[in-house]
Length: 297
Image (cartoon, rainbow, N blue to C red; front, side):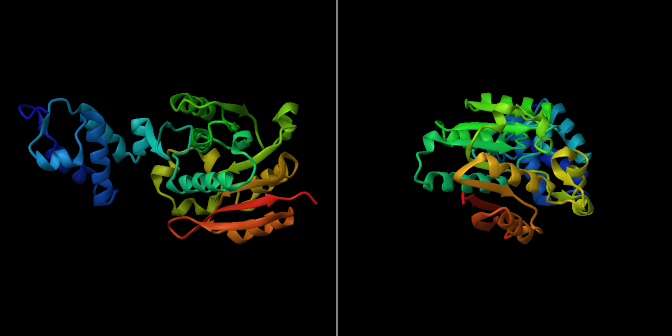
């Protein structure tokens, strides 16, 4: 640490609060600031508390990040990386920023997988709408002998997902296809049978845009976020139908869902004769995920 020249980090922190106070809360601004000083200067919150007069000579990068935060760009996109399920991930505006509730979905899938009698080593698992690859990569890291497949319509998203698989040293078979259009699915893929299918598809209804923050609306890919108001369960219907033909007997189907459509999802899975259906809340007590088991009649 060099205390001689430059600008005090505490002064930069004050600038952050002055410039961002009208947009973000105090704690969120502090969170941005401490993430950035640790990234750019390897200075932790505790270290700065012990040395409040610490100065930096080069502050262009952190002030550049501040200007992007003023435009409500997500800090994850500004840095180009983040942590999910204890693993490093690259992110950009072609993929959704992975959320904590999706970590809960991964945890649930792993718990259920490891609790089944069949050897997890032989599992085939499919992640539909993989985006950054956060679900597929996290599952592959915890189930190193399972065969993991990840599908997405976006070529740019798959580029990021492939980088994340490499970054975390896991083997995943990536498939570029549109799950809504069976013509884009190869015959070989259509014939695969899976032990688990998991998906976090687009589920935000367009009418819910009004309740979302500009940093999400203006930056994250709408293709991965929104569905038409009149067809909020479009992806769930199609994926559930696909799962009927591509899940093994006793295979499990997992979804992350719109918190307002939990009962609709239960009915959807019942209509397709799934059993052992369970709706699960996230840490915020919102109906956020659901699973069902396929049982051959």
